[in-house]
Length: 299
Ligand code: G1P
Image (tube, rainbow, N blue to C red; front, side, top):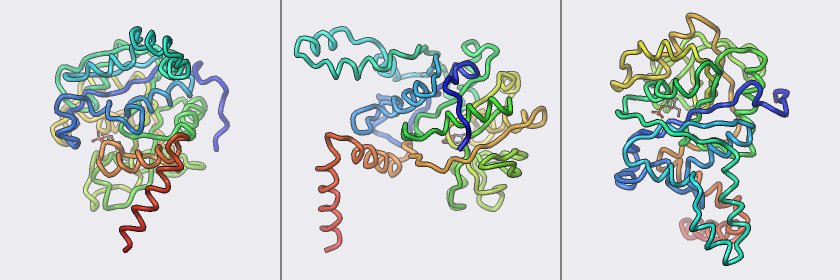
């Protein structure tokens, strides 16, 4: 594991959370409510990413929202009436739990049209100004015990270059991801030389897929401002990073821990089971329920 600094905020302070997508893989649940607000046990999906950002010492977040996303803003806002009620009924722990998120400043930018991930990131340009920044895709849910983003920050400190989180995926799944080609330079570190958005298995440069954590530098914005639609007719972040590669080194960092693609129904269920089994109030009864279900299925 990489040597980590205690305080990362001297190198990285800001994160962008794109959340304007239409969530079509979860219809009809996402017809009028955001995918990012689907609960995994007792927290909306996006909160896992926000807690990860807080645990890395990040100071500011901008969430890129769109239509039907107002509940995200309400969720991260103060809830005076609710707090008052909880206070009167002596539920101090719940108030603390709700207020834990106030450690980070959260702003919102609306993306009028869902033109793709690259376009969503470009909407955050006025928020980022001239600093490096993280991108957190909240449907890639990672347990806060994992240190992926912290490790990436430590690597950024050393390399001063953009870093993308990578995961080895089965070749049958490469078409769901941005895929890199590159040379291994150290423990889990790759110098990237090719990037392809959602290739078919024949043209994939490797089985190393980009997962939803990036550290990027502000020079990506100039490239994004000139980007044309790519795969799926969308302005792709992967294509912009492929252009950036011609100007400066870009690295990948291989994640070996647990990630859940909670934007997908099966991944969402796996995340729910994982976090329910970790939840002290639910763990014991949920475990025995699962074992019981498994026993019945075997019969
Ligand atoms: C996006 C990126 C893709 C990346 C993936 C990780 O795709 O475009 O390169 O591999 O996130 O989750 P999406 O899942 O939004 O289609």
